[in-house]
Image 1 (tube, rainbow, N blue to C red):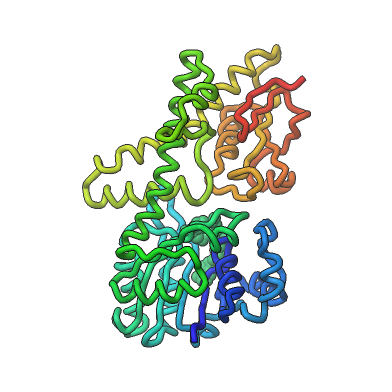
Image 2 (cartoon, rainbow, N blue to C red):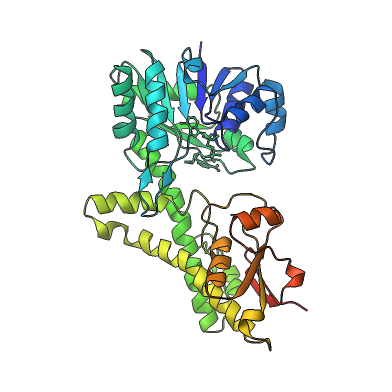
Length: 390
Ligand SMILES: NC(=O)c1ccc[n+]([C@@H]2O[C@H](COP(=O)([O-])OP(=O)(O)OC[C@H]3O[C@@H](n4cnc5c(N)ncnc54)[C@H](O)[C@@H]3O)[C@@H](O)[C@H]2O)c1
């Protein structure tokens, strides 16, 4: 009988744990956050913005899905799925500390025949090198006595349940046997599953999706600036340019969130380590173009300020929309936040408004709360409108 442990019950892990429980399997969820575990066991959903999750947690929390902060409570499980975060530091290097402690804890309860699958997005070769070593060192077992695979999480916050049930998911083993065994187990709860040649291919597939988006957003941002320079309406041109073989993205203030601005660095850094700087030139340039959009919009805002007959420092500027996308309360690498901070650092009277953030939360972020109707100029981060208020 398959007994599943999902380690990391966050925005990605909890919907997966709930979908597995709903397929009829018993799940032990492990998370260091005791309060979150206690909520889940009471049938209360800690991620209310996730569509359909309330119902699943109510139905399975404390029953088919037991949450715990102790790894030893998962010792009877034979499939371990890991979705804990991987952060990158200021120099864009991955910090594996959470992941290492997670796998070492699993290694301590790992038994012969168990299957371990990593789902966190990671730099290529992480599963076959780092994860394998941590598990072997801690368990005293060798690969072949346990099985190891990688299957990237491809959800979108808010739509995770339907994504898990419908969207194609991939899985690849660090060796052939691991891939085949993990595929069979995952098939019990993931209907649209594809076995790819190996774990490193599965890791690469997830990263290149992010790279594609980042580079295309950078292209759209660059074309947008060129269009403006030569007095062309970018949006109208884009409508006619896009067709089956051309899909120009929308311009933006850059790219925020935990995923797309992070993943290109996994490849850029890997190529740097190998002395192959030229292999990731486009990826690096795209990152720079997207991050520099903050300065582009800051300049546009200042130009708008010039139209007002007041000293620059007295003009109230409100930036609206700080969260990473509309309706998702996530501020990691928020470009709206970077913009309002940059304007303030330059001595301008800039504040922010976001319907998902209270004044106290804005102050904690080091930002002046400001309502759009109190401002002289409003910049909408989602619509990219810079406008004078009436
Ligand atoms: N959220 C998404 O939309 C999304 C999409 C694709 C991929 N992912 C991947 O999933 C990973 C996790 O993202 P998330 O959004 O779920 O993060 P999250 O911050 O919402 O959740 C992470 C969870 O892991 C727990 N945790 C931390 N250290 C732990 C440990 N040592 N042992 C057990 N639990 C621990 C935290 O308490 C938290 O509940 C990301 O790094 C990314 O690679 C997320």
